[in-house]
Structure formats: C-alpha cells, structure tokens
Image 1 (cartoon, rainbow, N blue to C red):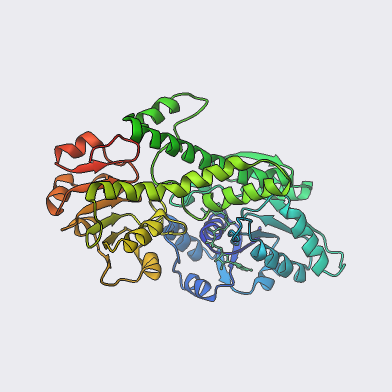
Image 2: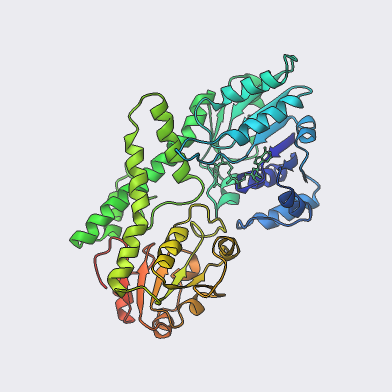
Length: 437
Ligand SMILES: NC(=O)c1ccc[n+]([C@@H]2O[C@H](COP(=O)([O-])OP(=O)(O)OC[C@H]3O[C@@H](n4cnc5c(N)ncnc54)[C@H](O)[C@@H]3O)[C@@H](O)[C@H]2O)c1
C-alpha cells in the first residue's frame, strides 16, 4: 500500500520505518525542515534502540522517502497516518491544532478515496472533528474518504520491538472498507487485533495511559507510607503483584512518571471527563501525587547532606526513562532546577540524553556534563539515580564509594539494594525502602 505518515517524531518515525519494513511504500512528512533534511541524508534525529539499522535497511530497499510537501504526500497515498503532537494546553486540555492543520491539508489535497488514520493520542470523538474539517475545507467536493482510529501503544526505548510485537492492535472504524484496509496493512504482524467503533478506540488509549499512571501513583503513595513505617515497598509491590488480578508491572516506586505521554494524557482525560460533568477527580490526585515526587526526593538528599550549597551532586540518568534520549517532562529537569536553586554544583551523566539536556541547561560553572558514570561521582558529595539505565545497575560500587567525597547515594529508581550498599560503606536512601542514611 502507499502510505503517508504525517509527523516524523518518536511515533511517526517508528510507524514509517515499520510499515516500510512490512513492504509498503511509505513517505514520511513533517513541517520541520531540519528533521526532513536529516532524514533525507540517512540520519535519525532521535535515539531509539534498533531503529537505525531498520531505517537504513528500508532506505536501501527504496521503501521509505521523506518530504516536507504534505499535500503531495496526501495525493500520492492511499492511507494517511496522522502522527503529529497533541501536547497539553495550560489547563491540561489536549491541544489539537496540529491535528486540525493536518486535516485541513488532507482536505485540500483529496483527489480520490483516502483513509485517514489517527495515530496521535486524541480525545474521544476527535475523529468526528477531523471528518467535519475535511468536509468543510473540501468545499462540498464529493470525494470519498474514511477516518479511522489506530492508537499507538509503543514504549519509547522498546518502540521497534513493540511495533512488530504489540500486545494488541486497536482499530476503530465506521466502514468495512477502512477496516479491511487496516487489517491488510497489519496482516503481517502477529498480534491480537481489536476492531471497535471509533470513539471506543480513541478512548482505549487515554484510558490505558491514565490507568498505568494511576498504578504508578498508587505505589508511590504506598512508598511514602513505607518510608514512615519501615516497610519495604519493593516487597509490598512483589506481594501485590503475585495476585494475578493486580500484576507486578508498573508497581515500581520512585520518582514517578514523566515523558510526553502519561502526564499530558492523564490531564487530558481529566479535562474530557470534566467536559461531560463527570467526576474524574481520581486523575487529579494521580497527577498531584506524581508532582510531589521530586520534592520528596530532594528532601531525602537534604536529609543526607544537610546543606546543598556548593556540594557536588552527581546525577545518573537525564532521560525520562532508560533507553531513550527523550527528556520531555523528565524528572531530571525539575531536580536540576531545584538543585540549582540551592546553589549546588551539578555533575550530569546520561548515555544518550546529554545533548538534549544541554539545550535546556547549557554547561556553565554550576552545570557540568561528563562522559561516563564514574567521572560523575569523582569527588561528589552525593549521587542521585534519576533514570534506571542498565549500565548503572552494573556499576562497580566499590569504585563508586572510593571515588566519592562522601558516599551518599539517593536512588530515585530503587535500582540498588540497601543491604548491598551498606557493604561498601555507602549511605543509601531509596524510595520507600526504609531510612538508611
Ligand atoms: N512518544 C511516545 O512514546 C508516544 C506513544 C504513543 C502515542 N504517542 C502520541 O503520538 C503523537 C506523536 O507523539 P511523538 O512523541 O511522536 O511527538 P513528536 O513531537 O516527537 O513528533 C511530532 C511531529 O509532528 C510534526 N508536526 C507537527 N505539526 C505538523 C504538521 N502540521 N504537519 C506535519 N508535521 C507536523 C512535528 O514537527 C514533529 O516532528 C502524540 O499524540 C503522542 O501523544 C506518543
């Protein structure tokens, strides 16, 4: 099939490369000229494990092309995937202006039947607005088209795996033609396919993300109680997770959720509920618990070091989670801001996200970026574990302890065991693991 993917960000790129690998002729389009320039030169603007190899292979096979000409891409395609951003407005409502802009462009370039697929995360009933917009700007020309919802569930850091091995593919349609086209497109992927109406598919995405965010905030709430009572949140989570009705996933206490999806999607769903006069207060509390994580984490550091002014604080992990360079809504950003307010000296390290972070916090006399995790702790008064990259879990702890000026580790992701840290003489503080500093 001839496919246009509009928006070549984290979702669009993986979708474009994945669909090209499945044998389709794909054109990735974006209004960001620099991105398209880079992609045209065979360079990826993002880091995602395994994506580069696949990207280069589909380029070589001639299955993938890039352009800024969205109109031409629409005219030359049978299926158009909308993968643009849907960020939060100040009040938490989803900003759909990028989606609307794409709908207008599609409308102005409809020259025959097209299937327009929402892959961006959008509020329930957005497809209706897309349809209306296309009809409105098409000035009554009777061109046939369908709109479908195909929400994306990929996890950054595992996106390539998730494209080819998703837990499920959700297809929301209101015509047999659209359903058949999407079933054909995904036929080579071995996954459970759930076909629903369009509003249901749209809502599955927001409900899934908000539910996962709720699980994280729930265990963080319990984690705070563990800190007060001496219970161990990891064991509590293990004990809960053994119950097949609960499951262990997303019960890791720590710094809470970040990234470009959970915070915005939880707030958006709250606003959607409110728009229908429904009590979605639960999601507000989920968000509030999450926002408090940073304060609690910094308090733990202060408990250990007392005064932070002029202390050298090493930070391991800047991305919002491991295996990505994405720093959108990363806890590290708030932590860095707080530490700078306290006049600490920061030594920052991340395997992939340092270039992105340098744009937010350029290096200066207070903010230093280093090339490896051991340089970060050399002479440091404390180490903060902020994202749980695999290499940190395998760190040589005796080397860490001997390099540090004062061996204090505040572990925001519970990657280390308190008993193990004590063996190296490290003053260790995890999240919900009882006080040990
Ligand atoms: N990142 C994730 O892990 C993830 C997972 C599932 C769903 N989603 C959803 O997918 C959507 C995209 O997320 P993302 O992380 O890929 O965003 P992103 O910001 O990385 O990419 C969006 C891209 O769209 C482009 N764009 C914006 N307006 C455009 C227009 N009018 N025409 C052409 N291009 C345009 C931007 O330049 C950008 O490159 C969002 O709705 C998000 O909630 C994201």
